[in-house]
Image (cartoon, helix red, strand yellow):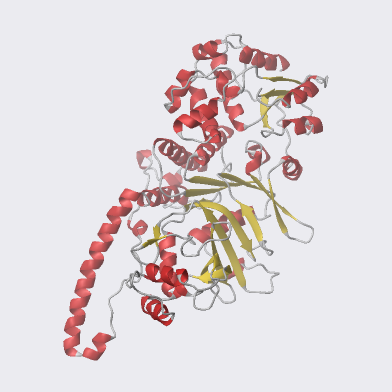
Length: 597
């Protein structure tokens, strides 16, 4: 399953119902104490209720009621799946989806007492007609009773299967099922059986907080390892083996219970009739495994510096990115990281950013970040922004990233240039940044007159967002920074030519160019692509290289573009660049930048 959105109501500062859409990479940005951490912690409460637990104190102080609601909406749903028996079914067949075809689960917490009480509901477009609205909550005996009361033929109905009986009843409805938006409780009885099965398909969620204790079982190390165990347990092959073990144990245990009941029946038949062997819940395998990392020289990891401890977190994410590149995954994992830049050297912050974006580009993985750091936010994709602000009346407002929102972010967070920066290099997207850094590093190694854009603190990148550079240029948003600008755009969008003309006409030392080839990926050598992603592809200067690679590998063009930036550009050499750019176009751009410094 893939998380599409989270909706909060009466949770801390979010009194009114507020929805935050979630993508592969989601960056929750805003001032301190505006509610960024609340979003991540609400997800932790929804999925785990462990690192952060729901508390009556989480109830919004201005609300008239006493309930908190945290609702998550999912796509990429499992089909088929097993709900309350061994019979396969689907969420659509069980009328458990919204009108838009998504699974919407609401957790409602009663916070009127000393302890919060949880209720789980599926919000769906569900039958409301009499005799057809409550089928999911009926046990097998009552379903058969309903089947016979409605005089439905039993010829093709498996009477030991709740799924078969429900479908028979719904399919034989003589009129309209009167489907309507309905909240179906799955907190107890037959509903809980459904919820227990759905839980097996929900994404794994891990919350990593910046404000961590320093104890022997430091969560900065333990949490990733716990998630690693959970991810391993979610693999299909392991799940099958664990299911076999569970069924074998249950079978043997029930045999013992039944023999015990048989002996008891000889002593007191009445008492024996009141006892039925049944397991309360499925086994919790994750609690049986504890994985740790031991530091060199016997030094506990929690006694190392905070930066070192967080490097372990960096390594975990990078290891995940590499693993996901090499193999597919079955269950979505959501990593939520609160203020990842905390206590990190700028170099390590770049490693974190690369790791997060690598993970977000992989199938079956989503990354949520929160930050109030201007420098960190400036390196994140604008379309990933979810800007949280406070209205005059105290309401929390969440806006999705675009140019207008980015301008408000810069005003709110106080984005100011590093005083060492002399030139701003403006490009369309983050993959262009990666590409130019790799190519400059190659050229710098052979010629010191070419700057290394990855290490030269006098140069800063500005990602304008694909499709919108013209707006940035016409509005001249970067003028207050007082730095000359270099704009390098791909050649595949004709309207960028006008923006380049405007930049070159400013007369303030700024300049701009469009690539002579279609886009930056056309400067890659086919051998670099082959070495990096195992794709043999031929192309010329006008071909759409990401699309060609995407078709060959079964990736979307966007995913291919990201993978080429992450893996193919680092595989370039000066010889390969010379073969693709014999006229020295890239070198010319870089030397012009050096001259500006």
